[in-house]
Image 1: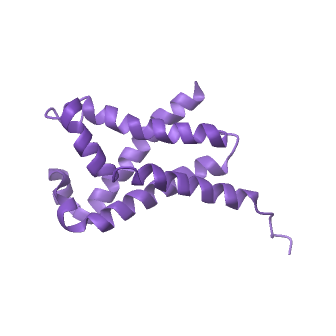
Image 2: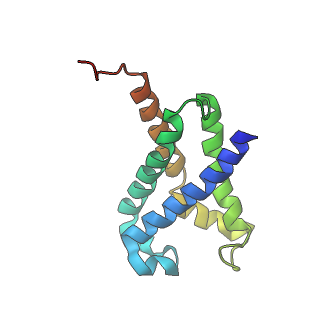
Image 3: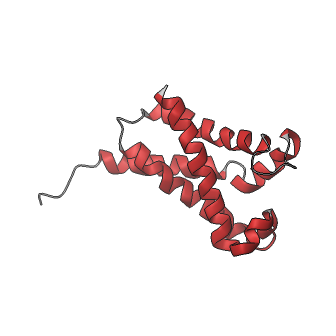
Length: 136
């Protein structure tokens, strides 16, 4: 149950990180739609991946929250959850399950967002596995 709740929470956090990346690059014009991607998609997708890594790293660092293999499923469920939120029409009435796929892929950079989240988790696991050097 707690893993499902973590996936739901991570859905909204990852979605917020996509919105933050859009707004950081496009400013007020990001509120009008995905048109920001026309000129600045390399920067946008880099920010989406970096924000996903930053969001996922603390979850992976504290291993008691979720084991490693389960975290992979939680990240993928959260990424799919972003599509469900878009397809539900809550954010915009004109979005339906068919055209939401395009917006979802365009906003998250396809698999770039979950790959960024996996990289953040991997880096956090590596950091946690290293012995502490505070006593030196």
